[in-house]
Image (cartoon, rainbow, N blue to C red; front, side):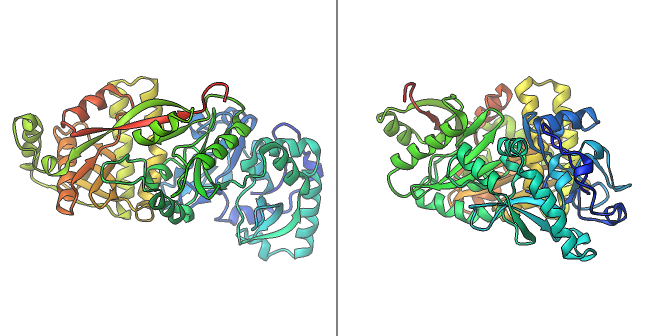
Length: 499
């Protein structure tokens, strides 16, 4: 990927920034446009106008989670193990929108990023580009100097400041060549001095420790009190974290604005970090109602309501007795038990733990299942959830072990027909995260759920948390049919009007 650069709103003319990487090098390269994981932080970032141009150039609009700007969704490489940009043709090594590619791609192998202390924006050279080994450093420095001067133009600074995700996290394999103080200052003036970090796999231990300190994970608590619950959506919406008043604070940058999917995680008083978190959201959202904190317990919501915050109930989690669902005994489970028993008699059916080698077959099944769901008919919200499933499931398949997720796949006559994934919220509670079953096989969904509960119960689970029903009537009826022992209340917190 080379450097004929133009920016979405202000334009850098090609004559001002000649290509430095020869096309022959680009066409031999196996680095650019290809990624090992679906949630790679190095995915190209597109501004809103760059998205419009890419779609006009033939890129599927569904490749962009938000039309206002964001990182493009990657697609699996059908000939290999990794992923690639949907605008890239791996057969020819050409970009289908090369003339309209975004600034993020035009800059490469130069990259804008924060320095290691996260107090300065710098321009660097990514040594993953093989051209670094073919070109003398002097010409690279000279080229970077020209680019750095262009990036200091007020109009360019404004564009980057409006899309701060163009600035990546510090990378040890990017050689720092020049600082861009104008961008650093503009970002501070617009967004404040709170240091935000993109949420990555490397941050999981930090979040797990914060959850443990908070005391929120408990046998009968919300499924949201686990890192995997949030990280799986990181390829759809960008998650960020920071520390405020000693509390770990997780934020989601949505198309409508910033909000928190969890309360500040702390082992001390929550009042000060919560106030600081709302101040961060006001800085980004103004006084928009999008500023909120989700997944509060009933007791925490009650306490904060007394301090003047507004609390709204949201969909509650379904909690079951694990031993009941493991055996499905009694009249109230008669229909589910009959379906399971009938399917259990089918020859060639087997359930085994998920391994990374199952990913391709899981992907094939998900596509079939999505088609089956669409043919049945879904409302707009249901279709949106279905669209997001591809990205979230890819993250789970790719990072199950790192996320602390366990999976089961079911094959019939050697063909993968169902899979499920979940995690231990505590050593007494198994949470069901994902379930996909071929809808043409009667009883398969019930069989899959029973096998999940049997396995969890045999490993010490007293409870099964099946999460909420997302407001979908069909899912609600399905979860109610298993007779939950409890519905775990869930609340959304916002500042009262006039706060």
